[in-house]
Amino acid sequence: MLNYDLVVVGGGPAGMAAAIKARECGIDSILILERAETLGGILEQCIHTGFGLQYFGEQLSGPEYADRFIEQVKEMNIEYKTDTMVLDVTEDKTVYAVNKKDGLLEIKAKAVILAMGCRERPRGALNIPGTRASGIMTAGTAQKYVNIDGYMPGKKVVILGSGDIGLIMARRMTLEGAKVECVCELMPYSSGLTRNIVQCLEDFDIPLYLSTTVIDIQGKDRVTGVTIASVDENRQPIPGTERNIECDTLLLSVGLIPENELTKNVGIGLDRVTNGAVVDEYRETDHEGIFACGNVLHVHDLVDFVTQESQIAGEGAARYIQGKKGKPAYISTKGVGAVRYIVPQKVNINNEGDVKLFFRVGSTFKNATVKVSYNGTELISRKRPRLAPGEMENVTIKNDMLKTFAEGGVIEITVEA
Amino acid sequence: MTRNITCVTCPMGCSITVEINDAGEVISVSGNTCKRGETYAKNEVTHPARSLATTVRVNGGIYNVVPCKSSEDLPKEKIFECMKAVNEARVNAPVKLGDVLLENICGTGIDIVATNHCPAK
Image (cartoon, rainbow over all chains, first blue to last red; front, side, top):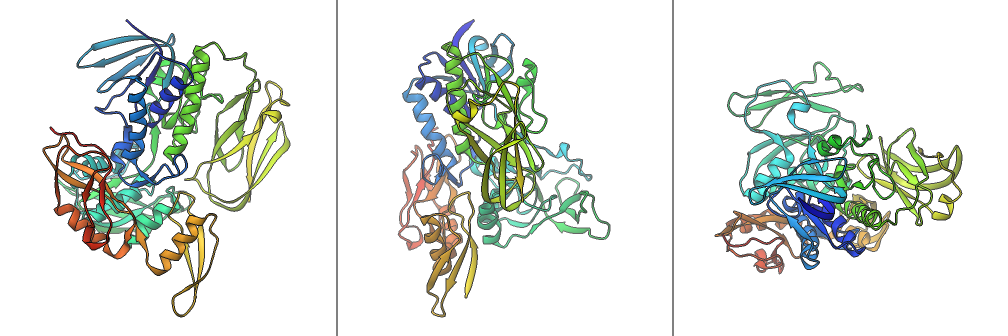
């Protein structure tokens, strides 16, 4: 049995930032467990630039952004094990993991940070009829084939879903000589960043069909084509709008799901909207000493925000280990109307600092007002030139305001057009 | 004449309006929320440029390819020409992040730089 103060599950941007912050807060005994062969997580295959503008004030590629943290982990002598799969985390914070070198590991931790990230929704989650020919894969799988393994998975491509990975892969496949016929999006808006629609689709004249989905896939051994159709307001295909498109590859970019199997095994309460744990302002779950951060908590659109959130979790874990966590008195947060969710879901009013509430809206707004109320009384009103489902927003609750709240109170965030 | 463009400099994606005279010169830029947006908008209507991120084939590395990017934004119309040059190139392992892999690509004065490490096999 190994003993560590802090075990971090996942060595991507979230896990590394959390571990580094915990070390800076005075925790010496830290172990990061990573499933892949290197630290860095999904950033290793995200070779496009645009990372780090918020955090570093620079345009970095994914591997460059990751490398800054990998170097820090090494400089700080934070222990890590790659090629190591965590099998189970128990309620008493024992972590079971396995790798080829050590065999089965049993690690007792004082605190655990869950930073497993998320995975892509696969075809099976979509119920698209049609054959099971090869050439159907998630956009992230194609990204790995092209950017890490160095080969092209197709020549004529249709992309279903306009999430950022789908848009990025539309450009990447085009640059490598493939013909991207179109990107189809079920919703009447794209969930990707506006800049990606411009620089990944419009730059290359790739059509984006909104309110459109794939209703059939043809091909015996290899995909030979797909049938697309427009959908009505209930997202049902409209008869007569079907169109066949010849292609050899269908890429799916239809959403990300936080990878919470370990979280569920512990019995940690999950938020039905985020599919991640319910957490307080330090990202501590309802199980004392177990924290969650990054895409396993809620799917972020910018890694910069993952880093910032994970530093909060790292600090929270350090405070917990050092016995600095005060007696909590919680208020809850609640998104109303167009505000789909808020993280954190609860806030300790005995907290010493300001608290940033992150939220996401369900539809697009121009010149909207974000309103924050406490037990029905409006506290904050902020103008926002635009709000979009693909772009996370935040409001800060100042500590002096927090101090006027009482345990059991409710903070609500709404958006008015 | 006015042109409406979306700034791609950062994830904010500001909608910017650029006013141009008959000689193609920029008269005014509005809608941007930072200085970078103004620069982007002026460039976009006069000589659009984009950063290029791709991969280069590696001989003798633990991976077949190493990711790379242009050290600065490349003229937009030269992107495919530059892609061809990068795809024809081969570099030898080990490659270190920051190594210049191709100098002055297609005569643009811009280098192609490795954005990750690729140790030798």
